[in-house]
Image (cartoon, rainbow over all chains, first blue to last red):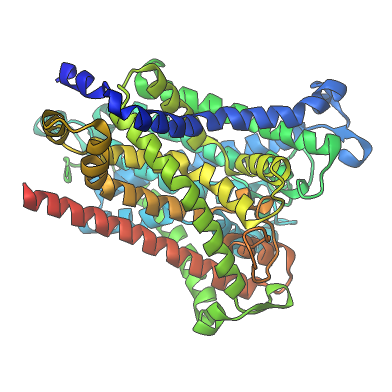
Length: 293
Length: 284
């Protein structure tokens, strides 16, 4: 079959036009990432040259009007919000996936899964709307001011949980049946089967899914922008308003010029760097190059 | 499906699992209920067909629907040929571990993880500034096209791979060129996958906000050409809730409309997939 495949892959003389056309189209698609990186670099370089990279981390604060460009408060905002969301969404998502597959009656599990599939497709701006008009007032009653790191964490959790759940669910579905049946025949309890067989067998898929969702939470803009309050400060509590890297870009891009614009492109570049790292790690785990503990 | 895999010896996991699931279900029921409760009373034909007044507080969303339609059309017109061509190239003219195929696949993997705001930055730099399109429907549509490509290509490629190898061998044995095999045999057979990819891409593009804020812009008038700025549904929701005091009611109604459209697109994909699976089983 392999030899047949390679014969089929070998184009005829008459197909040169098609092959070059397809190569061209694929080249456009494959070159996009490089083009994006190139543009981000191109817009950033002038500022890097005469401001220097270190000032983006050591300036007194972020105040572009006075040429102060410290990005660290926003970096912390992004990291805290993402970490909070991933830490809550992962156990909840996995528990709910276990529920849908092994605990709920069959019809209930199916309905649960269908509902989650719908929720996985809800746009971030709609989550943001809900957060702004329902969640933030609730938090404000509890602890002022309301728009806060906590609100951002909750919204991001709601956004990544459905996908983590669905990834976990499809990973559980692929666990080999004989090993489960064997364990059942031996009279091993349900939770032990889950702990000893199902979770270990789906570990790499779970980890890949979680890492990709971390990237998604990190890059999420609208929902976070709408509920986080967008004050430039390193948060000291979960009730403090924060601004994320993405929110910063969305808020200021419309009127930014010169070095200010370049600084925003630099935060884009930082974000893209982190996401590429995550995607590469996920791919490594998926292919088995990186071994999870 | 592996239901009933034994019983628990302790109550703790049962409580944990049911508790977690109840929390998730309760949260999401509340979320959907709130959206329906707030949005449904104002969703009417009139809302869909009248101009927006008073910065969107009053009136309907007709110009916004038209702008969204234009942006999505531009996006699909650009993304479809590139997506179909790349998918055909990856599935039919490269091996799994060929140099080019691997490079393109890897860069598409990365592209699918790139946050949408980065696409916005890129679109703003390339389409609005370098190509001089400014804030326009064209810039927005082109930016979205870049964004949906990875998804479209992956699903279309799967469509090509699902085509039985016999067809390719038969065509080759009959002396067909690769071109005519592709155009007359493989593309029609892979069409279901392509269509599913297109619908999912459409949904992804429709849900997008961050990539559009500084490419297609905010203007809520009826667009007169593709070079006008136009406001998409998602941006309308964002702007009404964030920048327009008293715009909540129309924001909710628009959000309900958007979510309704996305659910319908998803339902369509489920239906099509089931339909084709049944058809294929019927043939075999």
